[in-house]
Length: 72
Image (cartoon, rainbow, N blue to C red; front, side):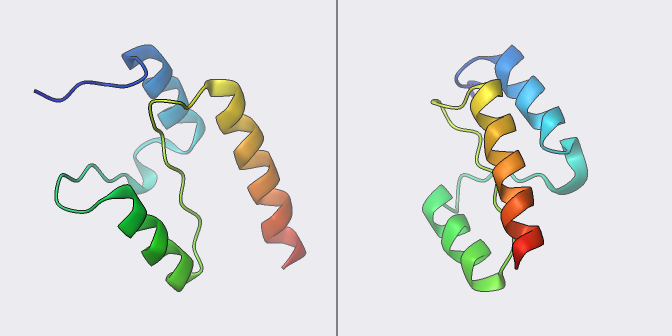
């Protein structure tokens, strides 16, 4: 059975902070590394909520990504 990591509350808050269901993927056939490579090739942002993600770290990552995107 699928287990939310780090925990369901953190995952949900991060998911909503990152834009919710706008573009959401849960895959057992494609690894996070493969998704990262694809996003890099396509020139798009990838937000990966992992076991080490915190709401604070995600907010900081999104903020810095937004600045970097505007500087392109």
